[in-house]
Length: 359
Image 1 (tube, rainbow, N blue to C red):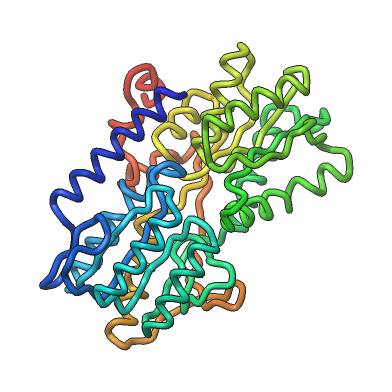
Image 2: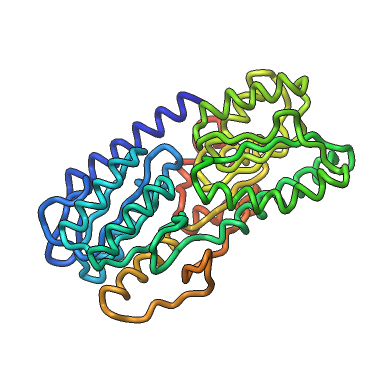
C-alpha cells in the first residue's frame, strides 16, 4: 500500500514539474503553474493538493488548461500542495495579476472564504470548484451532487452484501470517512448514512465498534485506523464504507496483512488502483465522477463570466447557484466505461498480476 502511495506521489510530482517547466496559459499570455508569474490573467484556478486524490494534476489541470486555451482566455493554475497559507498566497497573487474569476477548490472552508472575500473586495467573481466553501462568496458552485455520491456508495455496499449472502446475517459494517474539515466528505457521509442509518436502527446491520472514523483522506492513517477496528471487533468486519479508493486500498492492505478474506468495500474516484482492486475481487465498486465533464462545466462558467454571458445552472446548494453532475457506480460489469471515456487507460489497469482479470 505504502509503495503504491509513494509511486503515485512520484508520478504526480513528475507531472507537476513537467507542467511547471512548460508553463500553462491561454490566449496571448501565459502564467506559470506555480501560481501567477508576472503576466496579467483573466481566470485563476486554485487546486488543493496532490495527496487526497491524484486527479488534480493528472486530470483537472490539463482539462481546464485545454478549455481556457480553446476560448483564448488567459489563466493560471496553481496547486497549494496541502498548505492553506500557500493557497491564500496563491489567491492573492492571482488577484495581483488581474484575475476577474477565481476558481477555488479549497483545502478547507476557512481558507476558501478568505480567498473569496479578497476576490470580492477586488471586484472579482469566485467559483467553488468541486468543494463548496461554507460562508464563502462564490457566485457559482460546480461539482457532482456529493450527497448522491455518498448515497451511491451506500447503495453499492448494500448490493454487495446482498450478492455475497451476508445482508440477512446482521453484518458488522465500518465507515472510513474522508477529511473532517472537507465539506465534500461531510456530504458524502450524509449520503451513505442516509442508506446505512435506517439499517443500523432496525437491526439489519451492526455498526462496528469504533467503526465510524475520519481519516483526513490519508491512506496511512486509514490503514492504522482499520487495523485498530479489526482488533476491537475480533477481526469480524463484514463490510466497509471507504470514502475513496485510496482509503479502500488501506482496507485491502489491512485485510491482506491479517490473511482475511475480501469484504464488500466501496471507493470513489475510479483510480487505476481502485479498478484493479475491483477486478481482483477486493473492492466492490468505485464512484466515477468524470473530471472531464466537471472541468468542462466549471471552465464554461468561468468563460461565460469573462465574456459577460449568462451561466446556466441546475440547482442551488446552501443558496449558491450550482451546476450539479451525476456520478456513476463502477463495478466489474461496467469498468470498461473508464477506458472508453479515456479516464484511465487499459495499460494502467491491466498490467502485471492484474492482466489476467482483463481477458
